Length: 556
Length: 66
Ligand SMILES: Cc1cc2nc3c(=O)[nH]c(=O)nc-3n(C[C@H](O)[C@H](O)[C@H](O)COP(=O)(O)OP(=O)(O)OC[C@H]3O[C@@H](n4cnc5c(N)ncnc54)[C@H](O)[C@@H]3O)c2cc1C
Ligand code: SF4
Ligand code: SF4
Image (cartoon, rainbow over all chains, first blue to last red; front, top):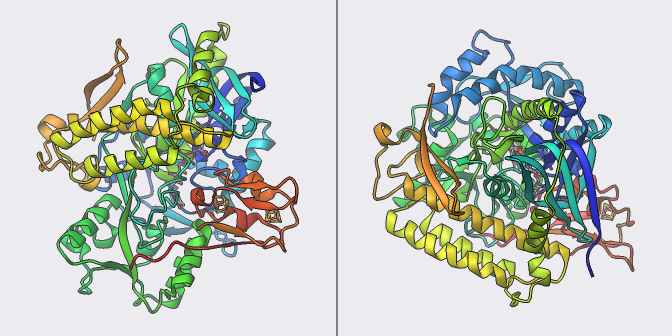
């Protein structure tokens, strides 16, 4: 029995309804385009990284002499040791206030309700109080309400699996409904990909693979892979993000602690951060990760987040932040009997993921493929919530302009639809399906990634990883499922393996170490600006293989 | 280890099923109560508890490492 088929036509198709996708849909609607937003979760009300809340947003508000785009751009090199396209960051810095104000207008609670003022703090990787701390537990429902109010067509529980192309440009996308299996074909004049970062790629020491800190475990590189397959290029795929998290419960929130003056201490009680960076606990996130890695490796673990010296007000502020960002962390502390005022909180290096590795975009947030735009954690630029919102808005606007300039007709090639359908439904229908479970295949993948593509990478290990990953890719034909929820997961597994192959390819190419733990080659331990201050760019070669090239980093 | 639903409190409104970002909770057609169908895949995001009008959701935690 063939599942039902739905065909929709729109001007701008937005894929993924997290922070970037919601703002993209709003901007395109405000411009007058017909907009369809497709989200694989049950509802955009609680999907994506900000599902359960946000407690801070970087903003450039012209409130102080230093509170300007110029000053922000000047501090960039110090706070972001990775490689970043400054042309795009300039657009972010320039547009930030406009989007921030727009969000306030539709109800984002950025101001303190009592004083009507912003609470500005210095976040991780910054000494100036550029960050606005706010009570954002309901930020996502507020954003979702605005999307609906503007008349965006919202299609939920549909996991898109591939782009449709024709005449060298994008024409739409296709995927399936995760409850009834219905095939969805979306025809569009332009497309914005906003599918977030990639989680679930590396082993989790507490065996809770889905307990991820840097994003939902349901973000698995589908946007990266569909863009790549359609012909767009990707950059920065070798760089990973590692967070420091409470031991046993991988959750975001370190920014809240550190901005209030919490210390990071090792087992001897020493504040170790100043050994690694002059800003101490305010050092960029990846330095904090590198420092903790060293402390543990050199026998000074376990490490702790220490709040014992903080005032009651400061501790209440930290707790408030947690409750507005990941409330279940407080339950975890309670269950473990941890009282922040009394106990240093055991911290560890937990998870590796990728954000800021992905689809390359220009100042218009357009990819290298005609009509295809992208924003947020799935692009080669990660500027957290603030960047996802600001550049999401820019992407939506530019995609709407592109759509109105497009005078041709949107033609889709039925063979592409059928191929993508056969590929995504295979675990349910294919005669090759041999009983292989996605969870088992994924465990193999994580084992490979953690062993060879983790902190200490070197050529031989990366070669091994590539051959192992190729074998895993071939075994995806054996994946077998019996319902559509599991079909969604099996497709996630397939995308994770494809993403991993791209990561290992880029990591092998970059023969230097850069950005702390983000890319640490034990066979090339030094940073080498002369040869490697370049983006490694991946694109699909004529023979379907991965083509590796490099491009200079311009600007600061 | 995941979100846990108190069947006695659950009135079957379906909100948690609708909003869970991971498709973890489904409504049971026979009992019309929410069921955590994929506990191993729960993100612990807290959304189901935040949005449940009946206070029917709590959480269990993985065993401590240290
Ligand atoms: C718990 C937590 C707290 C955080 N707190 C802060 C903070 O306070 N301040 C800050 O600046 N940053 C914070 N961050 C980071 C910030 O939230 C992210 O950088 C930002 O929200 C990313 O937005 P995005 O739109 O790129 O991705 P997401 O918001 O993750 O959205 C991606 C969306 O795409 C959907 N999707 C994925 N694949 C498909 C597909 N194939 N088809 C259809 N839909 C798909 C997903 O379901 C998801 O809804 C936090 C992150 C987390 C996880
Ligand atoms: S939201 Fe609460 S009351 Fe409604 S179905 Fe879920 S558990 Fe039951
Ligand atoms: S905590 Fe989040 S992921 Fe887990 S069941 Fe509730 S809504 Fe779903």
